[in-house]
Structure formats: structure tokens, C-alpha cells
Image 1: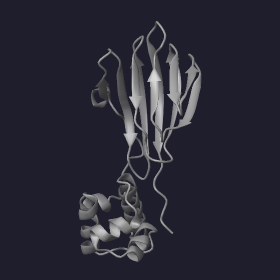
Image 2 (image 1 turned 135 degrees about the vertical axis):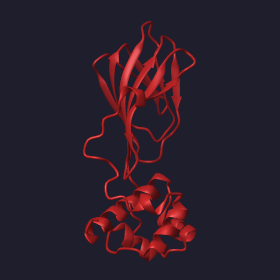
Image 3 (image 1 turned 90 degrees about the horizontal axis):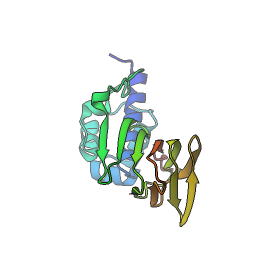
Image 4 (image 1 turned 135 degrees about the horizontal axis):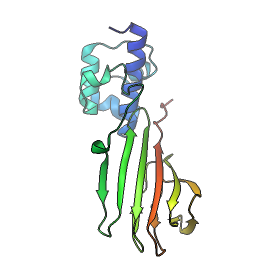
Length: 192
């Protein structure tokens, strides 16, 4: 069994991460869980070991089990994702987006491998504030449209941008486009 400090740190990270992942403020979680805002701050800062009842109320409000909140290590030191575990989203134009690997707490981090055929495009929705995307083009040429402006990213070039507004990935060329993308959505900051 982990020592109390390790457990408090794990609970802090898990509660903070689950709350941020759902876009909840401390006040919203306090209202839904019937746990005071002050107690939630102490829990998220690792300054207390809450009771099982308190964790149960927080878990219910977040839609997770108490076991999930007390997991000491959410992510193993090494996590291999085998080809059979990769999630692929097929596009109607023949392209695809493969989510190679991702994490969810305390911050969302995803690695994608995209393929778009000639003339194919994909409209991306606005992500939460603070979300960034980094893309490098492996084959072809990407036309990235964002904030009302288009940017051409060629083979072996890269781009980084704020993805908190609608954006478009397009292959306006005559050859297949392949790019690798990293999406990072930061954990929500603690309310002061």
C-alpha cells in the first residue's frame, strides 16, 4: 500500500485531472458533490487525505469510481500501443485519421497520423481554450485554414497553432497528403 503522501498526491492529480477533463470549475464540482470548495482545494493540492465518503461523493459527481480517484499511477512508465489497439476514423473521401496514442489526465495529449486524398478536407471543431496542435507534413502539402486565413505547410515542414477556434485541414494538391499531429489540451488551472 502506498504511503499517505503518495496517496494524497495521486488523489490530488486524479481529482484535478478528472475535473479539468470535464471542464468543471471547483464551484461546479462543489455543488454537484456536496463537498465544500475549500475541501476540494485542499484535496486538489494534496494537503489532505479525504474520507471514503468524500471520495465517493466526488466520484459520483465526476462519473468515476473511487478506485479511479485513488489510482497511484494512472500511466505506466512505459505504455506500448500495439497496431491492433490503434483507433482509426475513416473519412468518406478515402482518407483516415488514426489516434496512435493518447492520455487523459492531468492534461490531454494525443498523437495522430492523418491521410487525406487529393481534394479531401476535414473541418475541425474549436477545442477548449489553451489547446495547441503541432503538425508535421510527411507527404504532400497541407492547407491549414484558421482565423480566416490559409497557410500552406509543405513536406518536411511543421506548424504549431492555437486550436481553440474552428480550423480546416485540406489537401488541395493532386497527390496524397500524410501528416502527423500532436494535440495538447492543458489541465485546467486551480481556481484561486
